[in-house]
Length: 134
Image 1 (cartoon, rainbow, N blue to C red):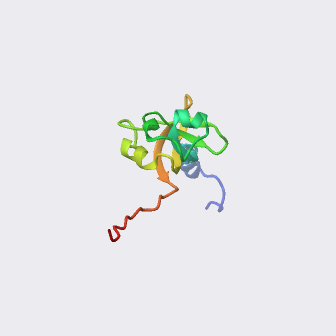
Image 2 (cartoon, rainbow, N blue to C red):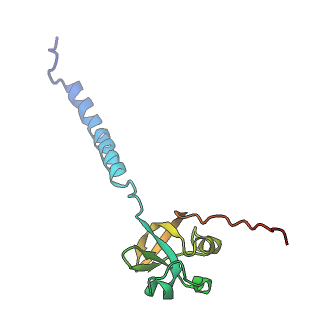
């Protein structure tokens, strides 16, 4: 008869067989916690033309500047951002957001925001025209 808690050859063999499985499970758990993606940074500012950003103009930036858009931040710095065919941000989105406050989500690589999302923070009022008595 063996005492409870004593190491017997059978228990020792079972422990040695389970040890690699426990080590593998611990390694997998550590890998999962280390590879969780970090949230992407967000940038708030206005989409304006590069020439307007240099002069810190937002509301009076002419629409012809939309061909070279940048994100103008509150501190006066501006960054170009990725948009168009190889991005989630379409040309139409840039037209709608031009000279409006937006939030861009994406990391900066080589001085360019690799944008993955564009949120409008400022909605312009809808204009209605009344045709009065003439």
